[in-house]
Figure 1 (spheres, rainbow, N blue to C red):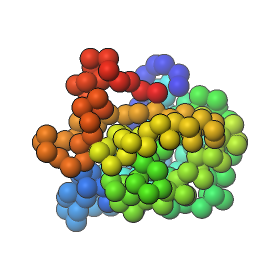
Figure 2 (figure 1 turned 30 degrees about the vertical axis):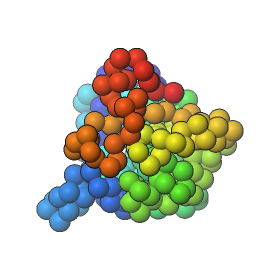
Figure 3 (figure 1 turned 180 degrees about the horizontal axis):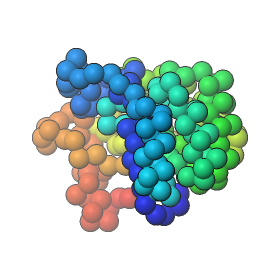
Figure 4 (figure 1 turned 90 degrees about the vertical axis):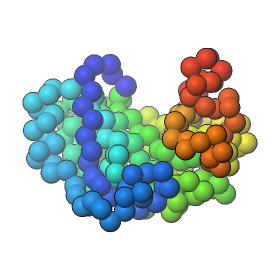
Length: 209
C-alpha cells in the first residue's frame, strides 16, 4: 500500500460473528448498531486528504455497511488508496464480484481475517463461513486484486500454519501472520506456543510472512 497519511474509518458496527474476545461480544446489547454516514465519510476524506484509507472495524465489519461499494467507487475515482479488513463471511460471490469491479487502483488491498482452516477457524471466529471467505479471496486473486489472508496464531490453529502457507501460495494469496496480545493469562486456552507471542516476535523469533 502507498505510504503517507492514514485515515482509519469505522464503517459499521454490524458483524455476524461472535468472536469471544471482541468488545461487541463482551458488551453485547450495550451499544447501538450504527453505520457511518457515507456523506460524512466523504467529508472526512476530503478534509484530511489521506493517501490511504483504512476500513478496519473495532466493533463491526466494513463489508456489512449497506453503501460500502458506493464508497469504494468514490474512493477509487478520487484516487485515494484503501484497505478493507474483513472476515469475508455472509456475502455471495456476486456481491464480491461487484466490490472487486468497483475499483482499479493497484494499491487497494483486501485483508481477510481467517484464523484457521475449515475445521478450526470457527473456534475463535464464531459463526464464520470459511468456504465463503476463502472463495472471496480466490475471486479477488482471479480479478488481479491484492488479497491478504491474515492469520492469528492460536493454540488450535498453530499446527496448520505450514498447510495454510501452501494453500495460500497455491492460490496466489498472500498469507500474513499477525500476533495478538489479547491473552488473559498464561493459562488462557487460546494462547499459542511461546514462539507466536508478541514478546517473542520482538526478539526476532517470528515475523509477518
